[in-house]
Image (cartoon, rainbow, N blue to C red; front, side):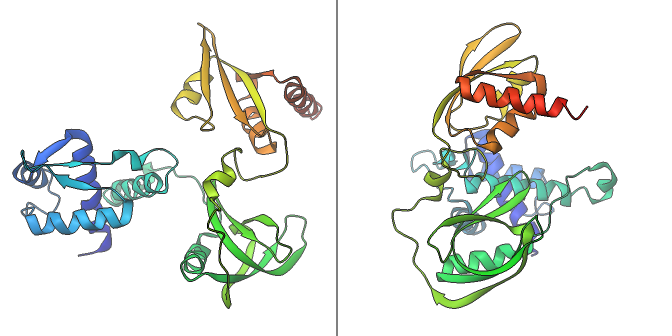
Amino acid sequence: MKPAQIFHQYIWLINTLKVHRALTLDELDRKWRDDGVTDGNQLTRSTLTRHRRSIFDMFGIIIEADSSTYKYSIRNADVLANGSIAHWLYNTLSVHGVLAESVGLKERMVLENIPSGAEYLSTIIHAFHTGRRLRMGYQKFNGEGYVKTVCPYALKLFHQRWYLLALNDEQQLRIYALDRISELSTTDDLFEMPDDFSPQDYFSEYFGVLTTDTPMAHVVIRAYDYTPNYLRTLPLHHSQREVATAESYADFTFDIRPTHDFLSQLLSHGAGIEVLSPPDVREQMRQKFAEGLKRY
């Protein structure tokens, strides 16, 4: 069986249990055959056991049976929370399955262009597993290129671009965009990432990938028209809170370092967002709007 078909079965099983909460093997089998997951073939207990094990290995999702009802359910659905790698992988495979079943409709699927660099993911992940340093050729936007050896700490996906967080020879953590890497290979040099280092904690005070020494701030914004709905359905940051709601606007707060990435995201909403406080961040936004108006 092709990997794509197996992944489709994993996603079907997860989706079915998410929707129906708990089902016996017979109930799962009926839905399995009704949906034509394997051309009407039966879902056996051994197949379900293998899939449960693989789903745990891939997503960390635990599917277990209640000993009194014999119904299967997902015990830890929280692992699919927004922002987790399991959530991203689950969504990616779900979309892949839908597209694979819709090849005949490909002209009606309008997708975003993904910059190059994804071909380096396997090399970086191999370095994660083996604890090896990476030798990297890198090209800056200003044309300057160099070769550097780094200790790979983490990968981050932001606005359709992959970024590598790595420790350089100067013992500084730096961000490298994969689409600006010209060559990449593992070395024989080993390294150990500190046990107390957490990539999630490292980025937790930021939006995006720029991790500057910008001071923390309690940012209050006012969102107008349809913008509140965008923020509610896709929060910008884990600290986002809605603190006031009116007919024509809603106020949100963020406890965050207001870096260029964060301010640029607010600017992308145009007149739909107004920064209320703190005053220095409001002034930065005013200046950025003023500089933009000079172009017209």
